[in-house]
Image 1 (tube, rainbow, N blue to C red):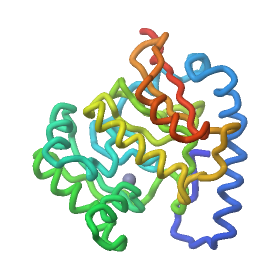
Image 2: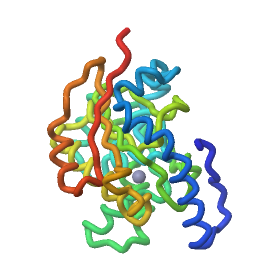
Image 3: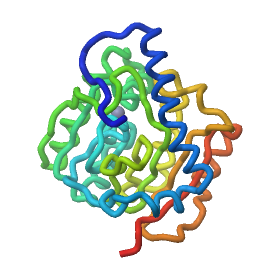
Image 4: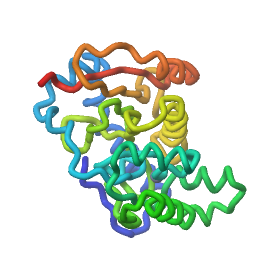
Amino acid sequence: MHDQPTSQTRRGPDEIREAMNHDWEAGNILMGEIFRRGFDSYAAHVQDIAGTFALEDRTVRCIDEGTPGGIHFAGSGILADFEDAVAWMQAAAVDGVTSHTGCGAANLYAQRSGRDLSEAEKLGIEHAQRIAAALGVPYRGHITKLKRPPEYHDARVIYVDDTGTFDSDRSSGLPRGLLISRAHLNPAYALQEVEVAISITLGDHGFGERFTPASPLMLAAVRPSRSPERDAALMQIAGKFSGRVRVDVFGAPDA
Ligand SMILES: [Zn+2]
C-alpha cells in the first residue's frame, strides 16, 4: 500500500474513484483491528514500532501523508503567522524546508488571501524559500513525487505527534496518515492544523463520504510513553463531526 503510483499518467474520474474504493477497502481490515483493540494496544504489538520514533533528518515537510519524514507543519508553516513559524522551526532545530506539489494548505492559503487557486503552487514554493532564508537553512526543493496517489489523499488517520520524533511511514503495520508535529507547534495553533487536516481528509480530495460513524476518520495523539491520557482538545474538535471523527491515543514503547 506504500508504493502508490506517482507517475504522471492521467487517470479519468471513474478510474480515480475505482482506485479510491480499492484503497479504502484495502485499509478496512487494519482500521477495523485498531478500532476493536484501541490504538495503544494495537501499536504496542506492531513489530517495528520502536523504529517509528526516529527521524532521519529535521527537514520541514507538509503534514501531507505524501511527504513523510522529518518535521511536519501544514504547507511548511504557510498558514501560520510568519514570525511564529520561524520561532517554532528555530526551536525545533530544523535543517531545511521543502514545499510540495498539490498542497492543500497552499490552496487554502491562496483562498484565504484572495489569490487565484492556480497560484497556490507558486505561493507554496515562495513561502518555503522565504522561511528557509529567514532560518538560514537550505530550501530543499519542491517535492513532486508524492508517496500517495497523485490525485487523492489515502489517509485514514491524522497523527498528532507530541514526541517530535514520530514517522508512521517507517512501519508497514501503521495506517496511512497525515502527521502534525504538535511537539514543535504552539498547542492552540496545532489545533488549527488538525482542523485543516480534517477538512482535507473529509473533503473531495480525501476518502470523504466513506468516513462514517461506523468507519470514522481517526485522530491519533502520539505520546512519549505508554499509558497515555485522553486528549480533551482533540475530542472537542472531533465532537463537531457527528461521529465521523474519532480520537484515540497511543504511546511510544517504554525504553
Ligand atoms: Zn501540503
